[in-house]
Length: 68
Image 1: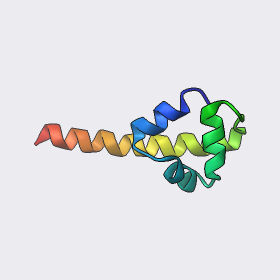
Image 2: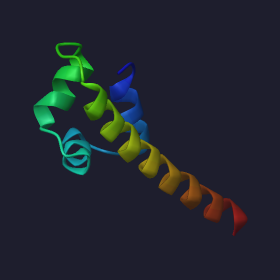
Image 3: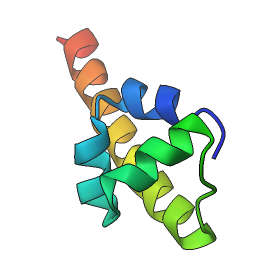
């Protein structure tokens, strides 16, 4: 998964939080970010779902701030 570290950081998640929410080991996230391991399709899908949910939460929070 390309740019995983940037996506994870933009969503405000630590490796631990992302791994826990996606149901993976933290070292899988770490190795994928470093290019030392390739994620399976299921792992990548789980990460995408978590990241998309977190980014939607941030988007809603920003929209609420600007609407106020």
